[in-house]
Length: 421
Image (cartoon, rainbow, N blue to C red; front, side, top):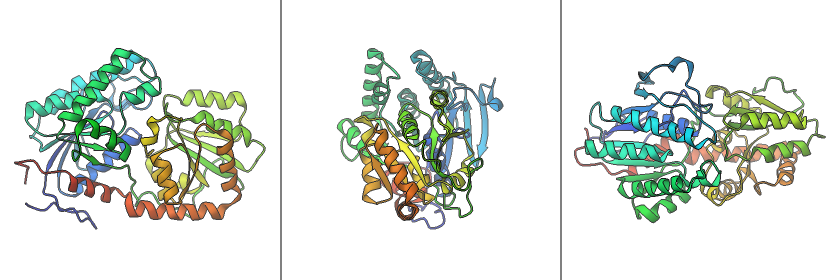
């Protein structure tokens, strides 16, 4: 078999293949799925594989189509040499079940036509959630007779049930049955964590599920010695939450910790990002008169290494739930790459990762007192924070660079008969 064209330092030896990537989420949107899938497509492209993306008009996380794409049904563009086709979507977010379902179903319908066009791929790779998009991919894979690779970054509808986003029993039942059907029918299922892998293997069987961890661009994210944050004084110690203000993030506990630490004039909480719960968080901070809390809008990814480097630690708060024990929040890896330790308010796989590698502080979820104590400890001990951060950088360099992750994923993906050469 002909070898792929490797990137610098790559050891990938798989043959050239053609991938059709179907996802509702993709840049210029910001978010975990968007960053991961863009890195994935770029790494495939660098290795000489043919990649085409079918995605939605950008509208996440606010549920509003970005101005440059409004009023358009189909858009064809190229991003970093990768052809991208965007189709119409009913833009919506929030807890309104009907609007969210219209959001999912509209793109599931409009994207099908684009999946049936263009050169025949060797694989049809689809991102889930939303699980309904998996049904679109299944239909397209059957019509085109190509293997379906289902990438599961979150258990759905289990997460929708846990967060109260969808309460309809019939809709939750339908979602569960659809997910189980896709697990069985997919050629391969890739999972973001070992916990997800174990769950999916109950339906797909052993040997069919391959791991595709979250990672980080270690060349972009690194420590900046001259980093600073505007509107924060030199003597203030910054603790940052950066990412989507979503329902899984327990930001109320962070505000509770900030309230407990208001007497510490040296500690500042910096919230960076956007999302469906941001307005509620901003209103809550204002109502409590938390003058140690600052907000920044979503920043370009190129600006984030500066913000992480200027922070004593980042905060990754999760609600207490059995479901979240199998997650590894993507926001922890850019922080560690910048030698900024993570204070993780949560349990399970991410907590073990930080503890086993001694690169963060883990506290019990939904406990403001423990979180406040951990923040105060790192504020008072910069040498400890520095040591944790150095070990975090070593960890991501060793295991979580995108090149290493994609190489491992390709090695685990069998080549179908008749793959493109």
